[in-house]
Amino acid sequence: MAGQNQCHYDEPMGFFYNNSKQVKDEWDSTQLILVQVVGSLFCCFILLSNAMVIAAIITNKRFHYPFYYLLANLAASDFLAGIAYVYLMFNTGQVSRKLTVNGYFIRQGLLDTSLSASLANLLVIALERYISVMNWKVHSNLTKRRVTLLIILVWAISIFMGAVPSLGWNCICNLEDCSQLAPIFSRSYLIFWSVSNLVVFLVMVSIYMRIYTYVKRKTSVLTPHTSGSINRKRTPIKLIKTVMAVLGAFVICWTPGLVVLLLDGLHCEKCKVMHFKRWLLLLAVLNSVMNPCIYSYKDEEMWTTFKNLLRCIGNGTRRQRSSRANARPLSSAQDTGTSQQPSEEAKSDDQGILKT
Image (cartoon, rainbow, N blue to C red; front, side, top):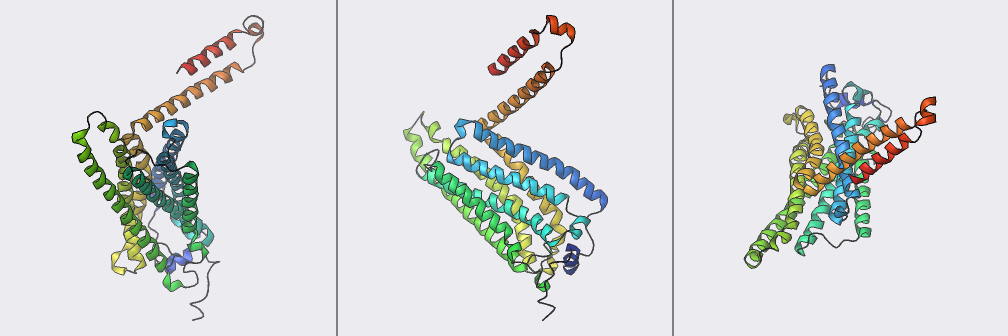
């Protein structure tokens, strides 16, 4: 009993990997380099594309509605996921065995927080869509204050969920309860984590099934009595299709991982959960890659805003190069006879930028 209650906070992670029977590391040097290179490219896309989504919603006044504010918050959770994946990639393989307990908590906490934020955002968006559609409106009447409070609540819950293992729900003082996929996480915590997320999945799917059946029924009733106005009435459906595509991608990418975590928590020794570890991580990364693509594909206004932002960035870069060239010291000949010429060119460049 004394050995069972002994805590091992000062041990490196290699001690816990060995305790979980992960004796051989699955990553050789070639695989690790390949994963880091390809993963870095994916993460760069995740960070840049989700930053573009947030910038598009901030700059375009047509997106200044509760739905799009929540969508920007979802993009922020994907942005955090990109940071978490970068941290994970460079702290995996043999490096993971040298991590401290706190370092491992940080690595997993970032992933858990980003997943919780994505899930909570999708749930809040589902409720917002339900309220708006049941009132047959494109956007709900949520005030900016309430949306802000919802966003703060989402992140408070997500950070707490990501910090739960480090707050005490772990197996550092009870090695027999350690899981295999997460060597310092208790099996009971994995069961709680996976079951709670799967239940939220079912809740969101049921909400959208209710929305879909209501919209289909409402549209079939309105169609014989409306002609030109039906296109305006179908506007909420476009937003619903966007969110349903995002939700579908999220469920497809994360359900296998949650099921495997649940099997690990149930101590299923015949399930060989370690064989799925890499593929589940790849699915998780792909989900954050897919979301910005869905936004731009399903929402023409979003895609147009993306192109305008890229055009502005390109114009700004050219303008910066031009201003740097104009700031160079002038020669004596230029100083005497052509001192006004660069400023005139700069003015014409500025006018051209403003016109675009």
